[in-house]
Length: 157
Image 1: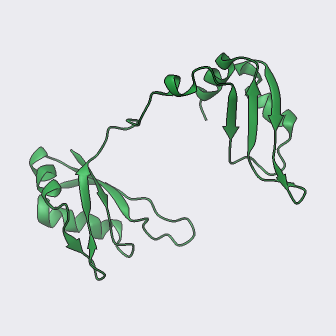
Image 2: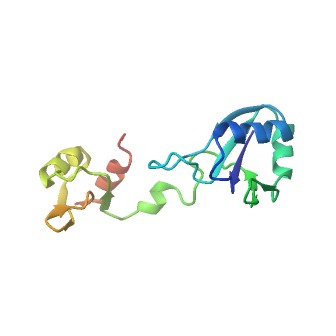
């Protein structure tokens, strides 16, 4: 019984979100709201879970309500199931062979990256973009066959 809430005031805390929905809707079982790494402030959206369908329905009726000092409007809608995005992964990568890999250490070499993906299939090319003589922290890995890309996408992080 979860809703997605957009427009959460940036200066609110998890407790304030919980309190707002508990007062208006009923028993809140969980609040998940990402924060910015540098400031720790909320990013402006959250998932709020309730103990009953009735409480969730009350929350959905709060769509468009005005909150906070700056008068932000909440956009509230039913939460999508985890992983419920557009196309399935297999449809999206069908016939493709190139993988974009991000968050790499700046000192990662082509050999290091090849070692990570060798169990997926034959790697024909690894390209690590550089700027000012230093890696940008990402790479492109091209496999000989689309099955290599599929195997890489199914790897555990």
